[in-house]
Image (cartoon, rainbow, N blue to C red; front, top):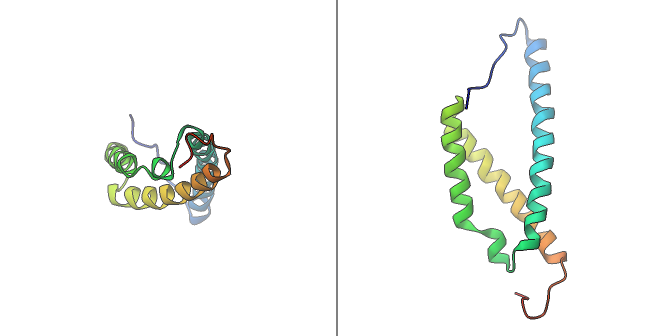
Length: 107
């Protein structure tokens, strides 16, 4: 996977315009990720399945590797992902709680 292509900016306005563009892309990707997270709630039986600490650690390990490949700080990426995942888990827990459950599979 190639590193991100960074434009050399001529002034602060251009830097800010590029940051705004990246922010728009990030928010769109967060919305997409969130939609998949909410879908995942349908396939999980218990709240522990939603929390999935082993899965969290696997994701963090994977994105730290990606950060290195793409020229990002693995530490920053890990912190961002841990915060993001915690927020998505809360959202997924709420979705999971709203779902009707068969009494034979209820947590």
